[in-house]
Amino acid sequence: MGESADQFFVNLLHRLVSHVPAGLGGVVSALASVVAILAVFASLFAITTVLERKGLGRIQNRYGPNRVGPFGLLQPLADGIKSLTKEDVVPHAADMAVHFLAPLLLVIAAFSLYAVLPVGRNMVLANLDAGVLFFFAVSSVMEIAIFMAGWSSRNKYSLLGAMRAIAQMISYEVPLILASVTVVMAAGSLSTVSIVEKQAGYSGILPHWFVFTPWGFAGFVLFMIAAVAESNRSPFDLPEGESEIVAGYYTEYSGFKFALFFLGEYIGLFAISGLGITLFLGGWAAPLSFLTWIPSYVWFFAKLLALIAFFIWVRGTLPRLRMDQLMNFAWKFMLPMALLNLVTTGVWRFLEHGALRWFVCSLLVVIPYVLLSRSLKRGWRLEKRVYRFAE
Amino acid sequence: MLFKIFAVLTVAGAVAAMSFRNLVHAVLALIVSFAGLAAVYLLLGAQFIGLAQILVYVGAVAILIVFAILLTRDSGITSQSTTSSSWRGSIVVVLGVFGVLAWSVGHSAVYQQATSLPQGTSMQEIGNVLMQRFALPLEVIGVLLTVALIGAVTIAIYEKKETR
Image (cartoon, rainbow over all chains, first blue to last red):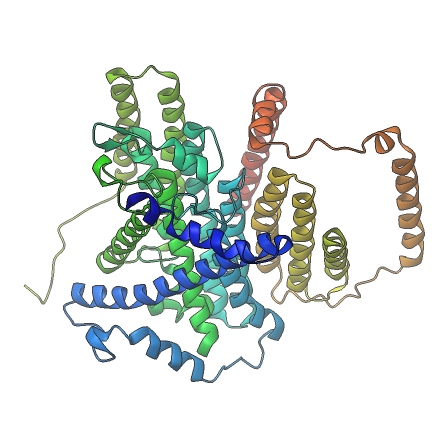
C-alpha cells in the first residue's frame, strides 16, 4: 500500500510522458506539473476562504457562511461567479497599463514560488541548486506588483497602502531570510529537496526536524512571525487596514482583478507556509516513525492545513499593530534575535553531539530573548485598564 | 533563440527607461531590463548570480529608486525634455566607446580561448570559494557597506534635528 500510493502521482506523470513522442516528453511533463500545481493550490485557496470565514465567524460568535450548498461549502463558487459578473471599474485617472498588469504580476509571481517546493517524495517541479534563493528572489517581485497596484490607482489610500506594504515587507524580509539562513547553514545546501532529505530519519519514534533543536525552534518562531508580516495578514495587516485606508493598495480594484489580488495573497501565504514546512518541519516527512506508511504528499498538505488553521486563529485573536510598533518589533527585536540565532546555529554545528550542545544552545537562545524583551519593555508604562462605562 | 529574446528585452527595457517621461514608468522599464539580464545569467547556467540579480536589483534597488522618487517629487512626471541638448555629440562618444570595447573584447586572447565553459558551477563551490579564498575581500566589503549604512543614517539624523 505505502510505496505505490506514495509514488502514485509520480508514476502517473511517468505514464503520461511515456505516451507522447520522445522530443516532447520534457515539455509535457513540465506542463502537467504546472497544471497540477495551479489546480491543487487554487482549489486549496477556495477551500481556505470558506474555512477562514467559518473559523473567524466561530471566533466572533457567529455562524459564518452557511447558505450556499451544504454547510456553506459552495460559497467560493458563488463568490467566483459574483466577481466574474461584476463590472470592472478602472478609475479615470489611473495608469491603464500598470493598473492592468499589477494583479497579473502578483499572481504569476505567487504561483512561481511553488516551482521549488517539494510537496511529496520526488514531487518537486524544479530541484534547483539554489532553491531557497529562488524563492526569496521571486517573492521580492511581489513587492513590485503591490507598488504597481498602489501607484497606478492614483488614489492616496492606495498609495499609502502600497508604501506601508513595501516598508513592512522589506523590514520583515530581513529576519525572514536570516531565519532561513540558519537552516541553510545546518543543512549545508540551498536546495529545498536536500534540505528535506537532511531532516529524514528518526531517533526512536521522533523525527530529526530542525524545529526540534534550540536554534531551529527560535528560527521557526521568527520565520512564522515574519511570514505573517510578509503575507500582510493580521496582526500585520496595516497595508489594508480597513478602518484607516479603505482597503490599501487594492482599493481601486473591482470584480475579477480584486479576486486576483485575493488569490495572490492566499497563494503567497500557502507558499511561504510551504517553505516553513520544508525548512523547519521536515517537508513531506511523517511526524512519527510508525506513520510513514501514509503517503508523503498527505503529510505535506496536513502540515499546510495545520499552519493555515494557525494563521486563521492568529487573525481572529490578535489586534492590529501600529506602524511604529511594527517597525520597532522588526528592527529592535526580530533582527537581533535572528542574528544571534545565526551564531547559535554555528555553535550547534561545531559542538559535539550530546547534552552539552543542547544546554549551551538553549542558553544562547533563551538568555538573549529574556534580556532583549526586558530591555525593550523598560519604556512601557503598563497600567490596569479602566473601563468607564462597562464596569 | 532564447538568448535573443532576453537580449532584446534587456535592451528595450533600458531604452524605455531612458525615454519614458514618467519616472515611475522609467523605473518599471528598468525592472524589465534587470529581469532580462537575470534571465541571460540563468541561460548561461549561472544560477546564483541570476537569482541574486533578481533579489538585489528587482527586490531592493528598484524599490529604493521608487521610494526616492515618491519621497522627493510630488507627481513623478518630469517637465523637462528627455533628451539632452548635446545628444548628437553623446551618440558619437557612446558609439566610439562601444566600438573600442567590442573590438578589444573580440580580439582578446580570453575570448578566443574560452570556447568551452565549465558547465554548471554548483552553489557549494561558490560558497567554498567565497568563504575560503575570498573571505577577506568579502569581510572588507561587509565592513564598507556597514560604514556606508551608518554614515547615511548619521547624515539623515542630523538633518532632522536642524529642521526642528
